[in-house]
Length: 249
Image (cartoon, rainbow, N blue to C red; front, side):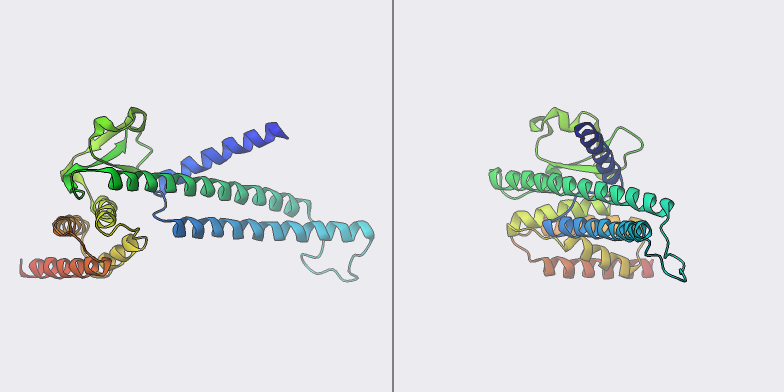
């Protein structure tokens, strides 16, 4: 059993790595809880199918078969086997998301430690570093604040820095959250989603999105304190201005 447990743990780790390549770390405990809950419910759904098959098997063993069996009223080895495998797969995904929740919280705590211990005033965009993996199959971006020489070399060994000119809207959103947290001293879990909704509703181009988010970061960076609602208002104003300039061009 212990050998099997270790093999399953290896599979969980592989599933976590696969998921991290597709999706970023959780922005909040609420987001982590929601994803874990979804995986737990999917595990329970698969388990319910397995329970139904096992009950049908037990009824067959006891001779309690219906006089006129309906489709699905009889035990199926194939269905039972598939259900058991699905339970294992869903549970593995749940385990991977639990680890991702742990890693996400550690990353956020690390970011907050930087905020609380820095001595040079508020965060500045120029002090951020956007990094990408050297491996072509990993499109995830990583964000570091401060002097790269002070960061554990193991964290950046297989990364290269993306030049400021190549930052995109997602990069600015990630950094904007940190800048706002720096000024407000609390997490802003829904901000990325709401910013994305505003940009999506505006139907602007990818290049315009990048430009608008850059201007939003620069405008908010100059303020000592700003409420998230003000950030949304600033973004809507920038979107309106960009669309007006495009129309006049």
